[in-house]
Length: 158
Image 1 (cartoon, rainbow, N blue to C red):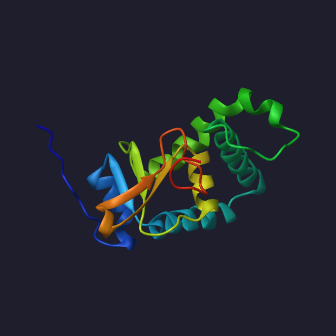
Image 2: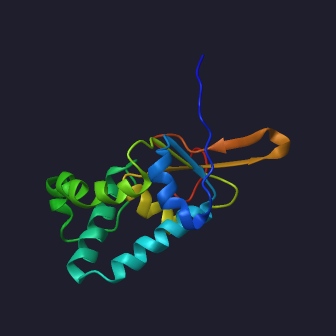
């Protein structure tokens, strides 16, 4: 048999501490939690020097283009993306993923639509949030993203 432990965080204010102490392997949440984390990330970036914000944007673009073959806006530095992808992910992406803990391998969002801008940032940082849609009448999940099809503007196959 397989067992699991189900844990609930104490409150939104204690989420970061709870993630560190619980060390979940699956994070299932409503979009508001991902929005909150994104907001704190954005607020923290606003206090950083311009070159840090530039590198952050680059990390997201490189990760976004490498995940699921999603379209990226053309840039003059795109030819450098394959050369710096590993470095950028190691220096910035990995650090930002650590906010969620060191064991999560599945991120799920449901209960409302996830903001596509938030989803794009997390997907670009290597945090693929799987969106699901369902209703109580249908035993909850009607459709959801697949591993290689986590487009931020859709739920299920594209």
